[in-house]
Length: 245
Image 1: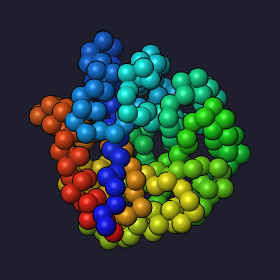
Image 2 (image 1 turned 135 degrees about the horizontal axis):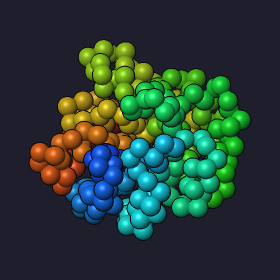
Image 3 (image 1 turned 120 degrees about the vertical axis):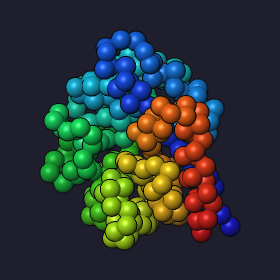
Image 4 (image 1 turned 135 degrees about the vertical axis):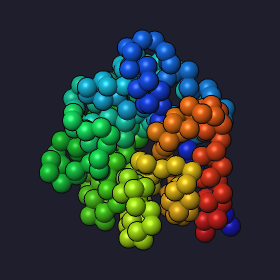
């Protein structure tokens, strides 16, 4: 019997990136919410970076009011942003790595170097009633450590696979990590670099419950509109996900 439809969350960060290019008020990323939800998205993701390069605090406040599906708030393990997340109370908080000089997230969260800091952030967020996911590389040790740190979900970094989809070791790593996460009782999510061309193998992984996709959708929307871009990625996920066993 096919498994239930996987959740698709659309990351609207790069709507804000376009706005911030001129520091104006358009396009407003909040206006993307009803379009995405109406086109088949099951949730909205936004990353409030410490350097505020795209999404701003006011966006988060407005998103919390506008989203009718569910809100996945991406953030780094910093006291300021964790405290803000606890105030906003999104349905989910995903802890991600951040480096000021990076163009985009370059890998999974280092869950080994400073586990106490991550564990404290997880506990604070969970204390506010927020489900916590850790964005990690598809590595078995990282999955097991995430469980030790108290996370109830992991989001597997698909960036390496997206860059090199023809290398079978990359999809194998994702499959193994997803299986281990599910065996340990965690929810398994995936994201980074996914698009209609490469999402199929990832969506076909039985343990994957949620896919977090942003840049490719916003890029496609420049040419066909946001509604159509979301429908295209939704259809690609459903075509592959319906074949899971």
